[in-house]
Length: 128
Image (cartoon, rainbow, N blue to C red):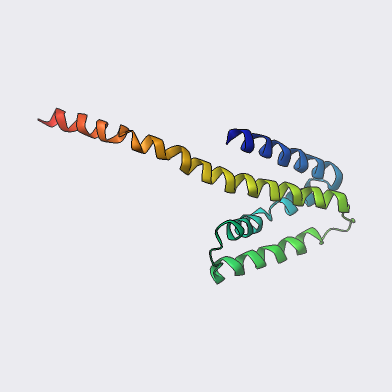
């Protein structure tokens, strides 16, 4: 899985730095912070779990706030920089979702080996 997460993280970073170079840090950073919306969408696509109002309302409010902040400057926003920032946000969201699943897969074999049980057994033996 690290063969997926590592390059994915690297590509999203390249997109981020390219976006900052094209649009400036103010716009690039603001747009990239829409990634929680992408995380919510990706989790919905992968699991088909229902999105509750408690998730949807803050996501919509955040998206609206980012749109207001991004459009508040006096300069025009370069479209290619904004697209790069959105690609960075989507890449980061994908990295988080894939990485989170990988962490759960890695921890499963360790639980099966009984490492924690042996440690507890050892402590139990000391009490006797």
